[in-house]
Picture 1 (cartoon, chains in turn orange, red):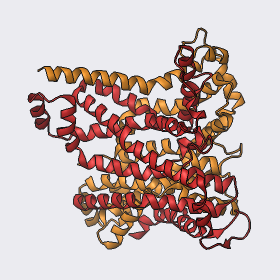
Picture 2 (cartoon, rainbow over the protein chains, first blue to last red):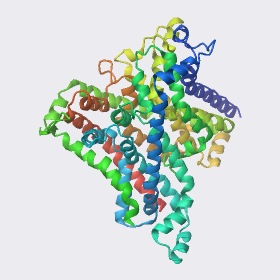
Picture 3 (cartoon, each protein chain N blue to C red):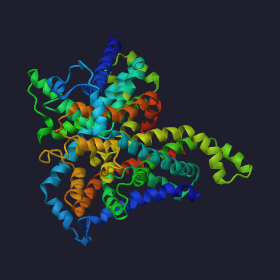
Picture 4 (cartoon, helix red, strand yellow):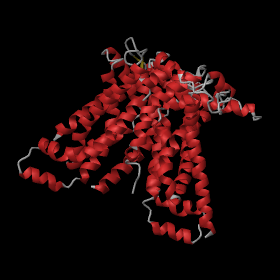
Length: 275
Length: 282
């Protein structure tokens, strides 16, 4: 059994090193967010001696994090709403209908997942600029809806497939229309799927960079991520304040992750694991 | 029944399909984003193929693909196997290694710049003070691409490991037990039981890696903006610069089209696998 014991030891060593590597940059960021810039450059690896909480208050003020976090929440909330409203009925028909037209539609949504942002970004920007839709939060939410709804459609479709058809048949015998079947039979059964979709879409929308940095540059609409990006750079000097801003921006996401990690992990790995 | 699918389809067509087709068209026009586009034939492509930076960017995309087809995949396979053999640590370790994946790229990028690579405030500074001479990799055109890749690998491998672990847990336990009774070492177990056991998942991840490697933009744009001296330039950063900083939408469209072309073979493979599996499932 020596091979077995060696495997165990090797596994634990690997797990230890890997967890340490994953956490090190995050730990350094949190630790140094509480230090002055002088303390950071003296020794970035030393824990803080006194907690410089003023990094957080001044970062909050100078970066105007309050409004930009609110914009991020607005974009994410509106995207979640739009994705759920459009993906749920679409997932229902794609799960239940047979025939060539529907197969082509499934194929189309799958293909659209792999289209690079760069292939539609430029015309989209110049068209939106013409229409006065640059610096508009609903316009960006609409773009995110197009980007994230195929994922939602395929996730919800697997939920619908798992709902026994007999339930719908029973409703049909009672004279329910397709919309009634959808609202009263399918939608309630989809609820856990919709929660997963909301979490993943909310995460993607609030973390998204390319569209946000291109379309939302005005202070009245800028998201927290882009605000943070604009304020910091390779040659930033006030790292204490910058890291404090970083901690405040990721904290809401990390808190949700800690409480709902199973849903995060299942939602994000959905479709990746093949039998 | 079409009405059920219509809103999602309409949004997708207007935001993705039509602009994507317009990009392919714009590649044959000269346009600064403001005036009237003028037909340019193949001029955009001729100019692009004559530009040394384009070839540098394309090469970097290939290097990136090669790195991501190997390094994170190997780390993730080893880690998934380790977690499979240590069930008790799984509940704690899975969220830890997954955590980098949920942090915003802009934030992770800046943290690595300041806390790891910076010669004034980072791990690099600390190493220099303690007798190891390490230069700032982000300031070196020959190494900046690899430094950015390191950040992306940090962000990415944990997710892969979780995916591989989920797949490995579907392998029949008898097979793993039999290998263990035969005294198989860690690498033998991985090579003869675990990797063959998760082949469909592994194939899908490799295909997606190729697709994403030709699209890579965020980490590079945030950390180095393609620099220094185009050292980490890729097609996506090149296209973005053409469109928004140099007012040359035709060139941007040409670069974006070439970029999509390289992802297309991988996309075809991806669609083939997905369609085949969804046909099996129904």
